[in-house]
Length: 360
Image 1 (cartoon, helix red, strand yellow):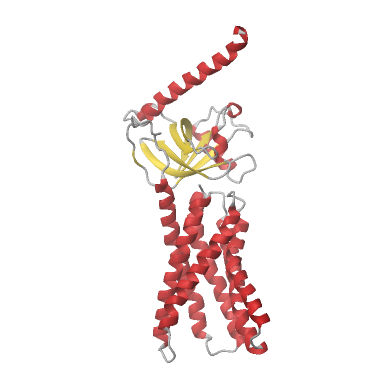
Image 2 (cartoon, one colour; image 1 turned 60 degrees about the vertical axis):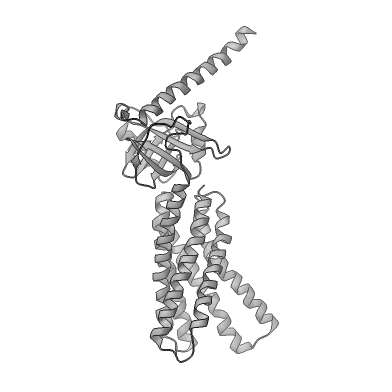
């Protein structure tokens, strides 16, 4: 029995020894003597399944705002599996603490070759095989001076809610800007063709709505490119533009059909179905891009629908009491722009909250 217990005892001692060494290294990385450990940084994250905080020193290579980390001897380690999907992580490097998003880049991943080159330039003696896990961390915040590890045992660089709030703020600003600017296109088109026939008005507004979607998608892609480095912005912009044009086409159908067939319960039912499709169109198109990169991306569809429902409610709550017959075009446009800005901010706030939750 003694002989049978030796491997387990040796393994336990090795684990305890590794833990002591890691604590010493982490203390040095968080001190003024961090330069004595070149090529090392600390990662801090919450376990995806357990939620427990994990902090460990790792070797890294840096390229601008991205760090590449190699999980050596991966068969004996499990921590890198937390990054099979985008995951928030705190980083302590060069005496500064950052917040970021980490993602595993396996063989065949679009960013794998670039990650191997970055790591190889920093560690030329390390051989990287196709099975070695490489984690790319995109830093999503400015570095702040690090402090000594707290006596309470709080992990150095432990990620907090500040990264989520910062991401929400970036998303809100860019989405509000993109939608507010984009909404001016169909607003201007509507003013131009207000007295034209349906044969001219309908395709003009659909084209303008497509342009609105392209501007919105471009603004959102600017933020997504930082937290999902392998997401292709062009796909996001295209999906958003096509969905926006489709939504405008559906939204105009009741105004084209109702005058010809008159009102009836069947028409009202079709209009209700049409409204649901309008709300689901944009989120469904963006889900087609997002589900390749985020687990549970289907939640984006109802979240986006709820965001646009709230945004449209705000728009009509503002415009309906203020718009009156006989007003000047300039006043009508001013009311519309103001209400459109509030609508854009509402949509941005709700979808930003949904995005932060998806990336947790």
